[in-house]
Each structure stands twice: as C-alpha cells, then as structure tokens.
Image 1 (cartoon, rainbow, N blue to C red):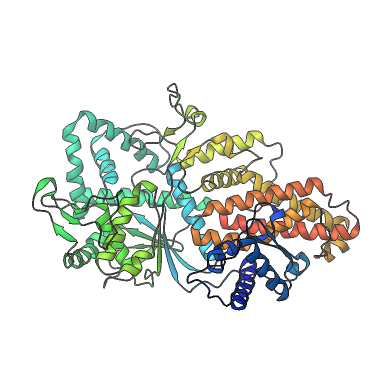
Image 2: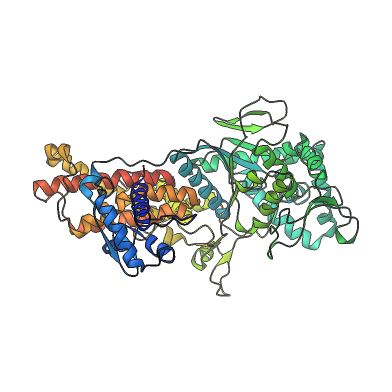
Length: 622
C-alpha cells in the first residue's frame, strides 16, 4: 500500500472516532485528502479535513484539528509510521514520518483494476519524414505506456495510419506531377520536399489543386495506379517512421490503417448504427446540403460554448471526414462492432491490419487514451458524442484525449536552420507545407554534434544516445498543454532541468557506490538504514523526496501527466547533488558512512525507476 494511503486511512479512522464522540454524522461525499507540503516544516503529509468539518461540527477548524490529532496519537500514529502530529492555523493537521519505521517497510502501488488500456500515439500522416512536433506526440504516448504498465495496467499500443487523407493525396499528386531533383538518403526526405513543392504549385496552378479531390477518391476506392502508388508510398514512409522511433525506445503493438476501416466495412457498419439515432442525419438545405451530419449535444448539458457547430461526417461528394473513420475505429477499440480486423506481421513484434490475414486477440479495451495535439479537441469531442448517441456513455467516459501543445522553434534554433528571424518573433512555427521544421533525423544529428563538441571524455555513453535522451526529456518536461519552444542549446545543458543532468546525477551516485565497494567493501556490503537522529538537513530532504516516489508515480499515471515524473526526477537529482556537496560520503565516520551509502543506493534505485518510466538510459558513466 502507498505511504499516503496508510496515513489517509489512519486519519479517516481518527475522523470517524471524533465524529462518533461528538454525536455527529460524517457529511456525504467527504474525502480525507492528504498532500505533501513543499516546506518540510509543515510536515511530511498534511490535511485540511478540519476546515471541511467546521460547518458540520460548528467548531473552529483548529479545535477540530486538535481533536483529530489526539485520536491519531491514541491509535498509534498510523501503525508507528508517524513520529508526531501537530496542528497549524487556520486548521491544518500535519504529520511527520518516523524514518526508521519507514525504512523497514515496503510500500507498493495499489493493484491495477484489471482493465485493458489502448493508447494510440504517433499517428503521423504517412506522406513525409517526421519532424520534432510529431516526436513530442510519440514521446508523450510512449511515456504514458510505460507509466500505466508500471502501475499495473495491460496496455496495447496503436499507431493509426491515415493513408486516405489529404496529406498523402498531396504527396501522390506531387510525385506524379511535380519534377524534383537533388540528393535524398531516404524516401521520406524526398517526399518532404515534394510535399512542400506541390503546395507551392497549388497556389499558382488551380488545375493541379483540383487533382487533390480526384486523388482522394482514387485512394479511397483502392484500385488502380494511383491507389497502389499511395499504398506503396505510405508503407515505405511508415517503415521509416517505425525505424526512426526505435532508438527512442518507442515501439507499437499494432498499425491500424485507415484504408482497412473503410474497405473492410467498419465505417459502413458504424454508419448504419448512427442512422438509427436521431442525432445523425442528412442535411437537405444550406451550405451543408447533401452532407451527413452528427448533431452536437446528445445529452443534456453536453453542448458548450466552445463547440456549437454540428460535425460533418460525410461530405456531399461522398468523401468521409477523418472523424467519421475515427468513430468507426473507436467502436472497434471498445469491442462494440460485430467486426474485426485480420493481421500480419509488419516487423518483429509489430502487427498491421491487412485483408486476409490472421485473427489475433487485439482491441476490446476498457479504457482508450488518444495522444493528439490540443487543436484536435473538437474532433475528439465528436467521437465521444457519437459513442453517447449510440448509447455507449460508459465507453465515452473512458475515452480520454491527452492533448498537448505544438512545438515551435526558438529564434536561435530557427537561425541555425537558415530561417529568416529578422521579424523578431519569440518563436517560429513549423510547417510541412512550407518545408519549415527540423526532421527528427536532422535533430538527432545536430544534437549529437553539439554534445560531441562539448565533451572532453568520449568513453562513456555514446553521444548519439545522450542526444536522443536529451531530446526526449526536453519534450516531456513541459505541462502537456504548454507550447514547447525547442532550443537546441538548452536541451543539451548539463545543469538545470535537462535529461543530461539527470543521467549525470545517476552516474555520479553509481560512481560513489563503486568507489565505496573498492575502498571499504565490508562497510559497503553492510550498508543499511541506520538512520541517524537527527539527520543533516540535506540528508533529510533527500530521504523525504525518495519516499514520495510511489505516490508521485501513482498520481502521474492517474492524471496522465508525464511532466510530473520529470519534475520529481529533477528535484530528486538536485537534492542528491546538494547532499553530495554538503555531506561527504566516503570520508564520513563508519556509522554515518553506512547510512549515506544506503541513502545513495536508495537514490540511485529511485532515479533509475523514474528514468525507466521516462524512457531514458541510466548510465554508469556519462
């Protein structure tokens, strides 16, 4: 059980006894919440429960907090895990951990509810090489996978391939109509230039622009030269995408192709179901005449001021919108369609939807999480609305959109790419249509070169691995909704909130432990939780933060917040380096040496756990 949960239960029991003693009923829905105060002087855990009870008991919160404290002390202070409890104005109840008792206990994450989670992430249009904005999606999605698996969920990872969309149509039009020469190592890089070139050509050649709609129809029909060219283009680029993600530790279980959803009747089945509801209809007049439309607000209060427009699912020309196909896909994800895909192996450990393949036990999720940028909030809302319209409110409630802010370039990084920054903007947006952005492969190379120039010792972790870890951490450390302004120089700094700093801190701890084993092997072997009383301030701060790791991981998983793990790991590394500077380890007297070695080992194990969740290496040497 989590440490916070043990303390919470002890407080709940004390509150119950106080209410019984005063002859009062506990208010319905009351929650005894505990939190970790930033200032250790305010306790290791704190609760405002007394303030919540003030109106019910008609007593000052400080008096109620005192009554709860007395009951907590009388009951043994949470199985002896607490050193003391005290109160503070205006009515906080603060408790302090007995660290010798904590060190002798094991604290575990609560058991997962046995639910299967499907996480869809990456889902890049298969029309060109990936850029850094796409990479943020992949890093967030993969970290959510790692977090949820760590806390006990069964997780299936999907990468949705939009092989019937406008972007692929544009690239196919370009391949057939726009001459292009130059040296390109990869097909995706060639298509990067084709895509921007065809969009420039559209602006001056309306006849070519008209070919996009024709190409979209041919891609959907799935027969003929254009459809085959689109299929071959998409598959080649997806293989490059999958290969490009592997060094980041990012892998998938299934590739779901949009063409499979359309050609194998998934949308047709969803369409017939939607037609039976009053929320899906064909518009007969106005600018949407001939379109099939899903009405907003399938439940009272479901429509809000932000989203007041009903959603077109089938255009008047018969072309499906992305949302239409996404609705069918999500009905399958939850196991709500009487249809299933068949599959074949795409690469080792990765399967793809295909006609005439094998049957596999995929899909049928209890929870679905989609990692898609925040600009797609409206289409994601409409998928939830469609589920509600069909009577699947429970599944709608378990469909979560992990929206994130886009990635732009800092002025310095934009200048490095040759972008004109004379207008003095704070950041520069990337645009595939204009060919502006950093390809993932180019970003790795630039970061690797920067790290090589800064290193005096090249014998540790390879510079390429450091570069990849630095990029991944930089894209994870921000709140999901925050726009990331990527700066090449900041990402590789050895100090501050960077992946390099975390890996350096881990390597420092491992080095200290290795030296201890060489210098004093008997003491290193006997290192234990002989916790001194009192501890040095730096020792206490580090130990306290280590104790919070299971709580942090549990909360980050429930809130889908990878940045919370980044914040925890950065603080942990900072506290260790403060401890390392303020408290000599190898020169300490024997009893203190044992404790400090034990604390260093606890730090290393905890940071490694956090690095694993974040998808970063834990190197013995950097």
